[in-house]
Image 1 (cartoon, rainbow, N blue to C red):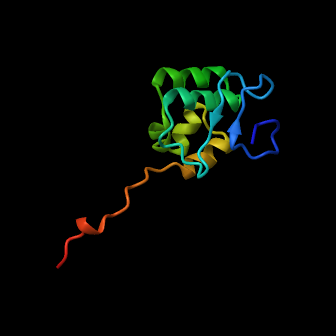
Image 2 (cartoon, rainbow, N blue to C red):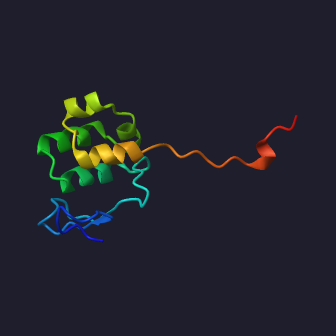
Length: 109
């Protein structure tokens, strides 16, 4: 799905000029987990959400990626200007996925 308005679910955000600032297509994970998102893609997401340019530039300078984003508290998000309902939703879903436990690695007692 392509972002054309605020009432649609954003599965894919298309940089159409009207919705987004960047010229890159940004595909969000189906589960909403941004943990593996690179810093460049994360700042593209901020641009598409039309956050203040200073906030986006600060995140670009800090090279904030999905891993750093997952560690932010609400207070830190508010101080850095990232307190946005969509970002809060994604932060709740952004966690490090652990590899499945292999049965051969389990010790038998």
